[in-house]
Image 1 (cartoon, each protein chain N blue to C red):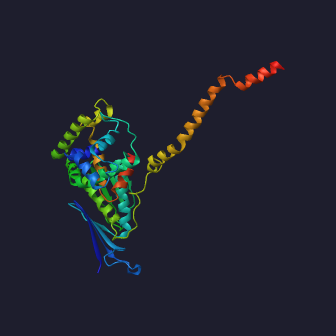
Image 2: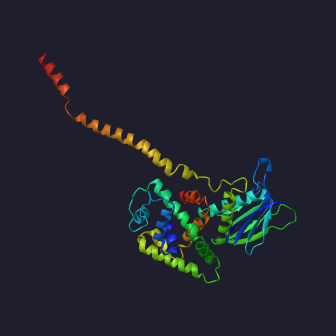
Image 3: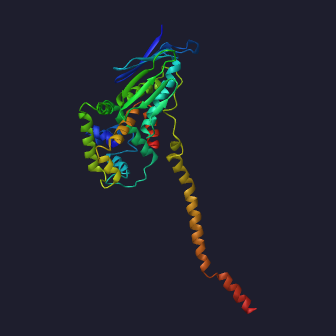
Length: 154
Length: 194
């Protein structure tokens, strides 16, 4: 989810940190390194480390994801829309997918089969669309609870 | 004079028309008795109906959107509304009229319009100015959530330390079986003397 948001926002890491400050999450996420460490709990990453993520850290990540989705909703919407018209040349979708693959190559362990699937433009479509939909459904005030439910069921 | 409240999200807008419940000392700008609602999606026919249709339609959209992202077959069917996925990007909505001899209204919407509509419903659900029977589908915790991380952490914290303590006690004490007991030796010596 965070990588999808980072694909849209070129300055994603800074935005995540600014949002954590705005949401008063400084005690849980005091700096960018903490956010980076938490994101390294993802087993698909090159720099995967098991840090035993705490519940309050997990909640804080959900809060900043929801908040960032609110700001990026117009972009998320446009990406989804550009995929709908099969006949039209979906430039926005192609740009998004290209940058997403670049980020995956840069950050993820490309030897993993699941990552290889994400790198394949023909196969990653479903994962990206579903992730974008989840983010777009969680921009309301109850977005935090909705995203939490979605993540547990994912 | 009826009150009118609108909820907008990009290409979709939801309008609620109704009156406050004065017998309940409600403010003039509140809506508790909904007489009509209209869902306007850009480039699509207007969807409107009575209060008894709003709840089931909202529930249909919420259930369908949940199915869509949970890797389950995205099909919702009811007396009032059917929603099916044509493919991952296009959704087919069939709204059936309760009046006889009225053809069902068929709409095709994409993911962008679907999320706009869901967000309009979210705004309505969260609005303090409209009193409707709130849908619990969006905030209802899943089974996995209820028995998930929270309980797991608590259960582990509760059971693992005493379990480890008992196991280590058994392991530690079992080593003494192989050592000579001093009391046993004393007893043997005393027996030999006698």
